[in-house]
Length: 250
Image (cartoon, helix red, strand yellow):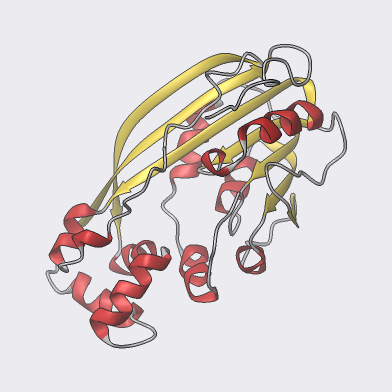
């Protein structure tokens, strides 16, 4: 899993993330008992880890970006460490639930499946989930629509094609959030490409205050829409089943 985060981008990522991690996990884990040991793969600055900690006694949170880990939220039930979906620094058979909050797509499929099988206990739950904040209209307001994320990234990446796992839920929905101008500015600047675009627009290395002022200028309620995606899986068989001899994709 490869991400490049500058300290400036990590700062905005840490300052505010929409409260969608909690919303999604509360839906995905509705009616389930509390877990002992959880793992959050691609934890970033820990927003997703804090959400998982609501359901676990202890959470191990890993990310390959030291900039993100340096800005991670302190929490008594969370241990942060450098790692990736292909190389998880945990012992065998030690985890009861694994979450991938927008990170599964970046994990090499074969290596990731082997690691899930290795570190999970036999009845472990795996929950890939993600959300897409729909900011196209906002970027168009600033003449930056070309800086919307244009990539092959798949928000719906899941484990449905892997016989290693038994599928439970596969859900998609759209939600609306009321946000402050400061919150939306953090969301817009938590992406390196958009951060650079606003830096050039305002001709300053720190465009945050000017962006907040522009977002606040209409004195209107700020509503942000987001699509949410989540699915749940249980281990279905022996470690590595079904992944050998083919090039796997999420």
